[in-house]
Image (cartoon, rainbow, N blue to C red; front, side, top):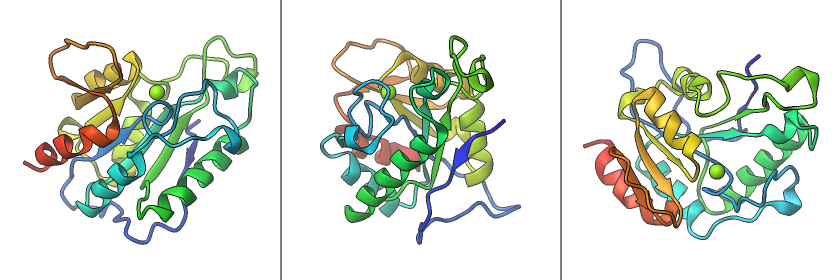
Amino acid sequence: MKVAAVAPGQGSTRRAVPGSRLRPGILLDRDGTIIVDHGYVGSIDRVDFIDGAPEAIASFNRAGVPVAVVTNQAGVARGMYGIDDVAQVHEYITAHLAKCGAHIDLFLFSPYHPAGVVAEYARASEDRKPRPGMARAAAQALGLELTTSWVVGDRPEDLGLAEAIGASAVYLGPDECNRPGVWPFPSLAVAAPFILERINA
Ligand SMILES: [Mg+2]
């Protein structure tokens, strides 16, 4: 089962055209990358945007680079919140980004976790990062070439995803990261110009 929620009202979104050339995109983690990772964010009252993240996304939009959110939401498998709650959070994020002149072209989330308690989602899945399911779904939907795309996230599973699909990786956070092919930055805001300089080069 593929769980996807596509944000409405994407006026400037360019969908993949059959037969057209594939293009690089940016695959963004959600919690710890766009919004503060409070741990299992399943309601809008717990959504706090990270400084500069909406503006960074707007800069990707202006450059015409497709942006997908790919987020593990094990809270669903763990019975902490439901699919509809995730969709509501994504609608809220969409509305806030719109105020900043930014949009996400595609929201994808994985509700699975092997240690979950909700039978439907209590299993391993190709859609759970670092497995590449969500990235491949995003590539299909947006016409992305994954090997020239970028993954941005704050956890090892984000770096694992980048490795699994052959993409470049930006690692956000205070920790050192010495892995080859991984660029560490303190925030999406600081990373955005670096990515934009390279993504279409
Ligand atoms: Mg994260």
